[in-house]
Image (cartoon, rainbow, N blue to C red; front, top):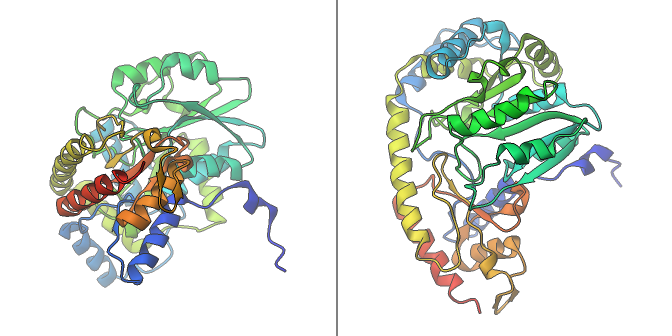
Length: 397
C-alpha cells in the first residue's frame, strides 16, 4: 500500500480538468460529446506569434533562461502594463511563470502562512481555494448572487476582514461568472483596503481583453494600495495560447523576489520559445485579440437568448470572459428514469449522459446552486448544445 503525503488530503482535484478528462473518454468511446467544460479559446494562435516562435527555434533560443524570464520579455511586460493599465513596474518586479496558474500559486505560497485568512468572493476560479489550503491558509468565502451580478460590495468585504486576514484574491473579468468590476465598484473596495493596510490584494486579470461592456480597470491603478497589489496576467485567453503555458505577475520588489525564489526550486523558468513568442504577442497591435473578442461577444449574445428559452435557468448577462454561470436550483428534486437530481453535480452528470453535453458543477467554484459552461466554441456547437440541454431538462419531472 502506497504511503502518500498527507498534504494531498488538503485539497481537491480540479473539477474542470476532471470533467474534461471524462468528456475525452466518452468521445473515445464514440459518443458525440459537446464539451463546454474547459475555458479555452477555440481559435489558433495568431500567425505573427507563431512566426516569432519559429524564428526563436532557428536562432537557437534553446538554453536555460533566468528563472524570472528573459529581460527583454519582462521589459515588454512593463510596456504592456504601462500602455494598457497605466501601471508602472520595473523589470525586476516582473516574474514570468509556466502559466498564470503558477504565478498565482507562487504568490499564495510566498504570502500565506498557516492560519492566515484569505478572502475570496464566491464564485471563484476553482484553484484559488485549493492553493490556499495547500499553503495551510484558511479560505474565507464571501457569497454573492446572480442578483448582485456575482460581485461583492464594500460592506461585505469589510465584514469578512478579521485580524487574521492576509490576502484578498479575485478575478475581473471573473471566471466563472463573467462579471466585471467597474472603476467605481473597485474604488469602494479600495476604500476598505485603505483602512486595512496589512492586507495584500491579488488581482487575476487573465480575461482582461475579453471585456464586452466597459473599459478594463485594474485595482492596482489606485495608488493608495498599488504597493500591496499582485497583478496576474498571461497569454492564454487574449492570444489563444493556452498550450504555450506562459503567465506573469507584476508585484512589489519584495514579492517578486520571493516568487523568484519559490519558482527557482520548483520549475525554474518557463519555455524559452514561448517567452520569445510572448514578446511578439505583447508588442504587436491587438488586432487578432479584438477579432476574437468580437466573436466571443456574438456568442455571448447568442447563448444569452438561448438560455431564456430554458425554464428555470437564472443568469446574469456576463460582461466578460466566456462563461455563463446560471442558478439551476429549479431542477433540484426533479426526477428522471435513473434517479433524482439532488444537486448541481447530479444535473451535470445527467446532461453529460443524456444530452451528451459536458458542463461543470458550481460546487468547485464555491457556488453549489450553479453550473458553469463555456461558450468558447462554434456557434453551431452552442446552438446544438443548448437545444440538447433544453430537450433533456424538459424530461425531468
